[in-house]
Length: 312
Image 1 (tube, rainbow, N blue to C red):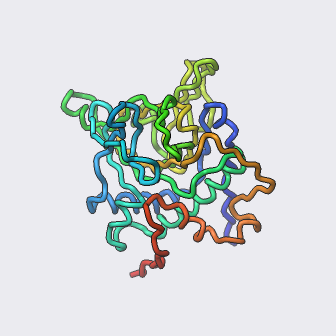
Image 2 (cartoon, rainbow, N blue to C red):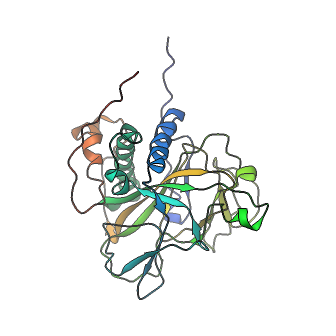
């Protein structure tokens, strides 16, 4: 008799409004992580990744990372700066969409969109906010390297301390980054001391809460920051304008999905009925249909038929 798979862990979103980090270890199974990693690596091998850029306003250095096709970007420019960030990115709604369908694992990519639809709904329900039907979503790769010499040190990936959205941004954009998301695609043997690449999140200054040194939320008293080990399947969520963070240098190739749910700061909603993944209430519209609304391009793409790979 086959042992049934355990249910996915529940996601605690309560830290997000407090300017803290929501961490859910093992949200994805090992098989799901491997399928997404297969997709990301396939796209990388075929040149779909580009150097990670810094988004800045032309008249004010107050940008954030990544690229957006839904928010107001008319006054934005993207530059690469290896003194601040070394990594490669692949936009799932642009770079990956342009790749040949035979590259990577499209089924895994479609399942990822389903998950994003469910997470968007969960965040709206739990936080009482309205999020845009568009979002930013990317694969992210940090190169591994050694710090034995100055020349080798340049090969290590990292991302300096920053906010995903400037807390003082008064640009008037109608839709901004609201909730940041990370979903790690590394294996379970990742060791923070050996491999580096931890996500360091700085806690609100007024709280001075002890550091938690691991992804399960347990650790020793050190200082007012939190280190999250990027083990595969771990989901991280936080407020884009409240949590300053950085990625420490990577001594091993590091993979992740990174995304931003977009929203309006002044819009609050009240939801009477919660819908969770697998609930009957969600069957009114299929997850596949919901995922198609999470598209960050200017036009809604045509629904793609999923092609199963033939077994040899």
